[in-house]
Image (cartoon, rainbow, N blue to C red; front, top):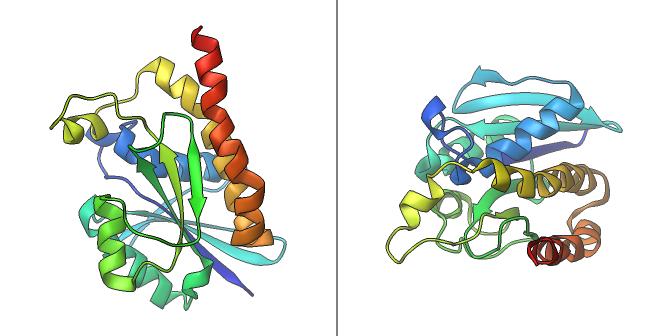
Length: 200
């Protein structure tokens, strides 16, 4: 059976719930809810499993804290003998407006601590879905911003992107990275236009 590892990045603990840096966790929680599965506390992370048309899908929320996420990713890739081409990592992204997202087949870590540590341990040749959290913070205040909690309005603006991210995961597993990028990256850009219109 083909296996896929889907990783959502975040920090464990109640104080980090619904913070911008935990957007990866939020996407995986939504996927698990839609699939009617739950996470178990296992080595290096919280893990849930399901299958899609005969393919095994392992969801991983690392419990290592963000800047050591690579330990969890490497461990579960090796443990389950999953090829890196079947790894998808979901992270928050300050360079994208809230509600936008971008799927890439590989690339740099863009200054993201979690992606940076994964890159140190396994290289940068893996798919990642970056979820926009915006960058409405004064200079030097990025840490406070990413560790800050979403407001109710922001959560409402983010929800359509989280719903779409669940579909992106399914498409990545069933159709592969190239088809999924072609299909969904256009949607990821459109999200912002909707948001701008609603503010006028």
